[in-house]
Image 1 (spheres, rainbow, N blue to C red):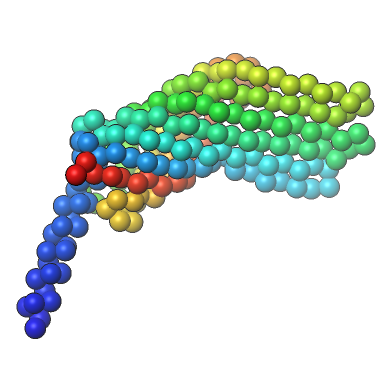
Image 2: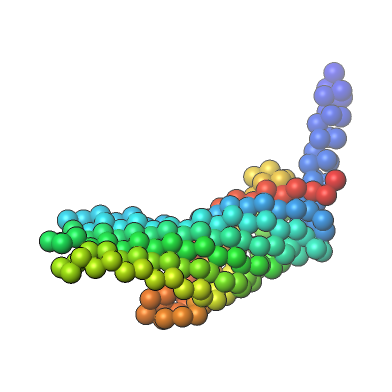
Length: 194
């Protein structure tokens, strides 16, 4: 009886081992969603919220080397509770092609490096103040990122990940900050070619 139970378990373990090795092989497609820069602050004088969601899609063009594109969507809102009420709202939408390389390993723990660069459309709107001002501004900026990340594969097809990036944005450095560090957390689904 134990032999009959052992054989299916052994076959399942071997198949799972092969699937784990195939996570980052050529032809595997990748779908991902991550988020970062989330802030919520509230006090007697102001309320602030901001965050970014980043859906992405890609394909492994060689073992451990993937290319793709991400579409970051960001939102921010700042409201000052002063006599005349001032608010500032910002939206951003971008297209960032990326290149990612995974350090070869058969473990559930994988380290990778990522480079991305592209354009981001930023729209801001300022309302309020003593003159009841209503201003809006739209800019397109260049954004480049370099990062180091870690993936933990909870199944052979799903990985939880964190990515620390250094990014540079063109445009007004006082508004966009020039160079900044960021942290994104998310997951990726790996769809083998077969």
